[in-house]
Length: 408
Ligand code: NIG
Ligand code: FE
Image (cartoon, rainbow, N blue to C red; front, side):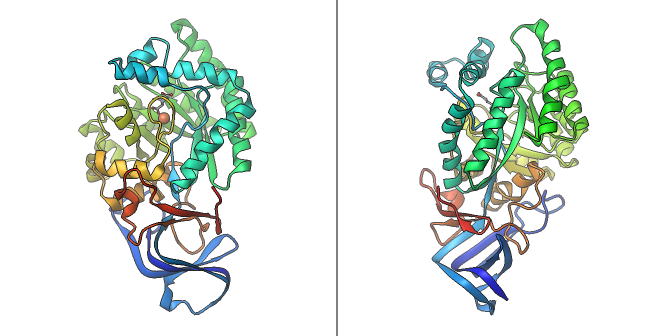
């Protein structure tokens, strides 16, 4: 076999095998190949095996000098585009106010909406670019990015256009999601706002392919299940995938609705109850955990251990946003999931690769396998478990995307 690039000097190549989600397969079922090599041609892996079994020719050989390699990480949940900051909220919270009280009082997400509406598209791009580069430096090769701080249809479109512009500047694959974040503060305007979202915004986003899915925040201080049903049914009719911020602070029927409608993922789940685990386990929906939120807001951690033991497919994301999770590292999110959500290192790797890809409806990301895009992470260490062991030091040496080392 003649290939463009051969990667050698790999102590371990570690990856889930087969398509996600890992239904019927233990989430800890990963393959670790020692003294390995990877052959890459035309941006894809063409051969993966033990170095001693490689007998082909390569135009260029890259020796990693004894490092572990894992698949390109997938961050399945970010709000990386925003303007302004939430330092005033942070100060309020450290002096005793809760996230929900601040939101109910007109601050929180609403203050970020104000700042984001005032920013130009170019300003939003300039603000988001270093955040996405930080996620890449932490190992992300695929990153979901939500709108949701625009609120008006035109400002939501501005955010999605900014994400499209960011894609042209970055080697990582961005997956854009339209987020219907919070209702108008005046109760009597909720219905007409939803009319506008379903009759104008969602069809326009579908026609222009500005997003591949629609997400909605369902909670006591946000949208209710009947309202979410209108939004998500409209998304499905328009050929878009659906996702939900569910069971973050209160259980108000969001999870059940998301499962009934066949959501790609339900995200948060901090207050998910044991009687809900089997429902998730029986579905095709991924349970996405966001441990940065529990750490930053001091709220309960989602029951990752219970969900996995019940047979659910679990993913992990950063939820990078200014209010509930200023966490700029997907490897740190995985490290937190081990501490806060009870995942093993192996489960965290599956959660941050193949299952996170499944949460985005992607089957061609998150694995090191012949035929798939050559996205992978070179760790600094010889043992891949450093990925989820280190806290506060970046375990990532280099990120390769589509067969080339990414400059970050
Ligand atoms: O995923 N809970 C709703 N939305 C975001 C937070 C957004 C914000 O606080 O700005 C979340 O936690
Ligand atoms: Fe979120």
